[in-house]
Image 1 (tube, rainbow, N blue to C red):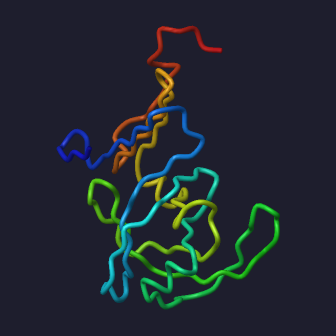
Image 2 (cartoon, rainbow, N blue to C red):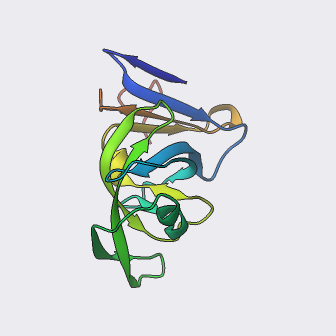
Length: 156
C-alpha cells in the first residue's frame, strides 16, 4: 500500500469495492506537544475544508492542550469559536506530518476531517473506474496531473 523511492515520494492508495461518496481511511494521531498517546482513528478527506478538524472527544483522549482559539465557519454559515491544537498526523504509509494545527469541531461520521491544509502538501487524485472508487495521495507533489493533456479523448 505504501511506497517510498526517489521518483514517487511517500504515497498511499485506498480502494473501495463500489462508488464511494466519501473518501476515508484509517490514520494515527498524537499530540505534538506531549506525544504520550497515539490513536488509530477514522479520517475523512475533504477538499471543501480549509483546515483539518478533530472531534472534542478525540482531543480529550489525546490529552491535547489548546494553543489558541479561532472562529470557524460551519456548513450552516455560523461563526463558531474553536480550540486550536497541534498534532502529529501519521498517514496510512506511516509518514508523519508533524505539528499541524487542527481545529476542534464535530465532523460527521468520522473522528477527523483532513482538509486542504494537508492535501496541499502533495498530489491527490480520485477515480471511479469500473464502479470502484480509488483515491491516492503522494507527498511531496511530483507532477501536474492534467487529464486533458494526457487523454486520447476530445476535451469537453
